[in-house]
Amino acid sequence: MNEMPILTNEDIDALERSKKALNKQLKSLFSGQITVNFMLEIMWKMITIHPEIGQYLPAPDMNQVLSGKMNNLFYVLCVHIVGIHRSRIIFLDDTERVKLENSTDYQKELMDEVYTAIKLRYNIEGFLKNEPLIRGDKFIYFPVPYYLAVLNTRLIQLIPQLKSTPGLFMDMSNKALASLSLLQDGFVDSAYPICRIIIEEYINATIFKNCPAALAEYEKFSFYDLKHSIGYDFDDEFLDKFDNRLNKVAKNRVQFLHFGWVDAIPNYHKVVKQNPYTFSGVKDFLLSKLQEDAPGYTDLQNLEYYHTMCSGYSHGSISYSKYQILHYFEISTILTLTLTNVYFATCEELGIEKEIDGIDVIGLINKHYQILKVAESKKSTENFERYYKNFNNHLIK
Image (tube, rainbow, N blue to C red; front, side, top):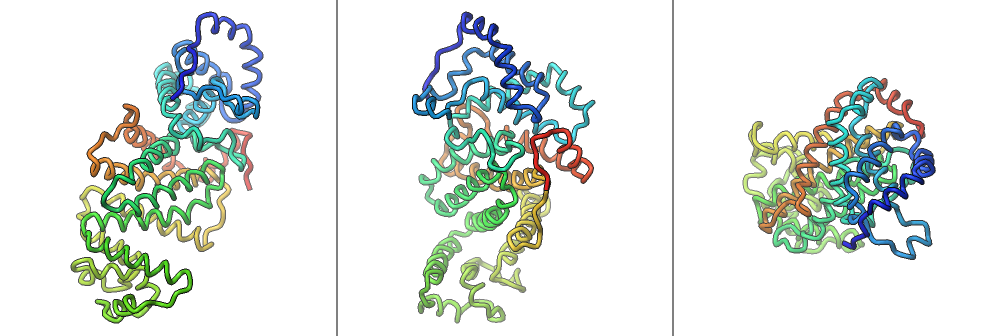
């Protein structure tokens, strides 16, 4: 990380003289996204309290400066203030919002959050965009997606060191990054087919953790599937496994191609009688092995619900929703329930600290995930309409 010069008192005095013009430009850029006077108040307080904050941004690169792609400190501060604050005022009425903005405790909390986000920003600097391709919220600057992107970037660096399930975890991480990219650009409904696969791979990985033999078979069947997808006939080894499958009632060869590896799971077919060679069978088996009060049981039930939802988007039975914020809730939830646990398992296997740059990123995700779920619990057509009416930077279909 390259350091920028710390702002001196002379620098701050010079800024005061040009503050009026700068404020006018920032108001123009962020109008319709936030109460701009509140945003500017927080920004200037942060520059005064934390004159060293610029050191966490990349040093100026002449090519970026000349191309107009170089972000300045003022813009970066504002875009983070907007993202974090927007995540906190979803479905608040004007009275509630003003009360929050006037709270000294909240202002301090917001500044601390912005400082932390900027401190971690270098991890995903190349991934971030200033503007989404589809007009609307800059969801990547909302805390849950932002910290998930930081977590996922670190995860991609760690996965090659794993001895178990590195391929599966890497595929999940790559797809998570793709989902976050779609969320960032406003193509939120297009992330569901990818999230559907992430859920399936997460369920599979949970089983493999306790049954290495199933993982070995899964890798074999993945190779059979790859060969078949590029035009090869089924080879003798696969056909022999199909002829000797443990559930002869199930006769769908393609289903067996995708899930024949479940035959390596002890007692699987004693539990799953119907549709054994399907994701539904795998999911039912896993749930049957957990007590309702066991850690992770509720998460798996929720993922079952979201998998069905994702299938609706994947197969076209659910049309595009005009409320992007709804998709933000759902995509963020799916990635939180899967990615954080994958990261936790990776750090556990490698025996390394889970913090990133000394910051408890999982703790931050969990904090803002709870805030997200509270907002989501208030979703209604009336609240969605009011949310978008309060801001003028959205296109509603």
